[in-house]
Length: 99
Image 1 (cartoon, rainbow, N blue to C red):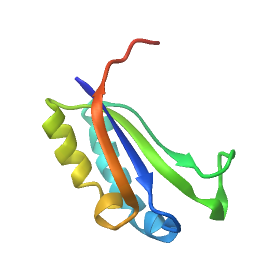
Image 2 (cartoon, one colour; image 1 turned 120 degrees about the vertical axis):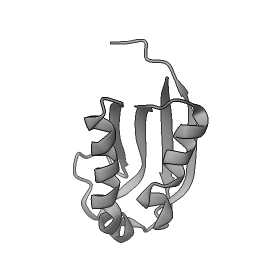
Image 3 (cartoon, rainbow, N blue to C red; image 1 turned 90 degrees about the horizontal axis):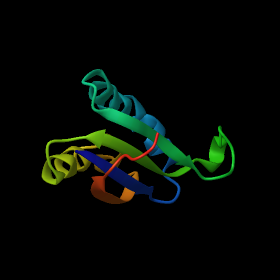
């Protein structure tokens, strides 16, 4: 089943986000390579593809896991969470309808 991992950044954590980004991306690439990643990306803090110093307000990952508990374990080990970027992470089931 798919699960949505909805994360919210703490204020003023762009530097920490950039430092943890390679490890964060490596985990997403592993999900993609396993055929389990539906989509992933950040929420820019402003209405722009490249928000620059405005940074981001969080991220969304939708991926396939064997259970809610497995998705939560994966989310709990995210480098953005362990490095103090995220202030809140919500994991919930997701049912893809379209396209």
